[in-house]
Image (cartoon, rainbow, N blue to C red):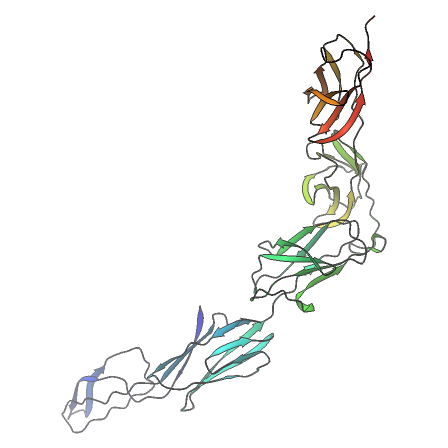
Length: 405
């Protein structure tokens, strides 16, 4: 898509006049000129003598048509070509840039955009006829990153993609490439990480039109992680916000929130999961967690906000309740029974260090039972129950074995 500039030299006439007859009474010439693609700037009619039809000499105009960008804009680093059409062929065109710091143009009409600003590009014919167009050159964007502290785990940023369409952006930590993350349609992006200390330098970089990372300061988003003790990223107010430890299997995460807050949200691994129920009288909250918290490796947080403004973020300490038990077993009984923690996926009977048989699990009551009769012969055998999650052993308990007298 291009905008059109036209430069034309003055011409006499460009068509054959047909049916022209000179009238002695009115001293006029009557006739019509055929139309073509060229615009005649002036016409002069000549005739030799009264009363005769006249065929005028045909003379064509010299025309240059040149095109720049459709909206009169160029992007730093890009090039456009002004395509030239001469009629007749063979005319040279002289191209001139009014500011070569902003943009240059060569003898072939190739314009290179150098830095932001306005530039006038002109085209001149050998006879001095001239036309020009003004182009606004815009710069590549700089990503903007939100400030972070040691306890925060989500890096949030935004980049203007109006002039330069970005699909991804790369995060560097202390100058080392960490990960490439997608850029949303509104230019926003996020990156989750933790364990960083105050003084850690985070950068967001992207590649130019030629596939090279831009390293100039004006094109790089950059922040330095600060200590939570000196965090001023929200404001200086000390908001009231607490969270209690969460035990696996319990229904809710609970705590207190500041009266200025309008919501408290459960986040797991950097993603918003569920809003809390707020008690505006006691300024306490509770959020259902049992369905979402599956293991101790998940990153669990609660985030307090007022509208879209984050007021506070707390990590939730998760603990496993020791609920793996085994009831004493008397030789001759059919089963060994007990309770297990919901994190476990299997409970196995071990005799003298060897796995013998899997238990049947009741996932509603978190109880288990396993056929033991025939496997346990005497109280000298080492009998154990082992709770595991997949191949990872969670707990191992000894089974008290009794002999019926």
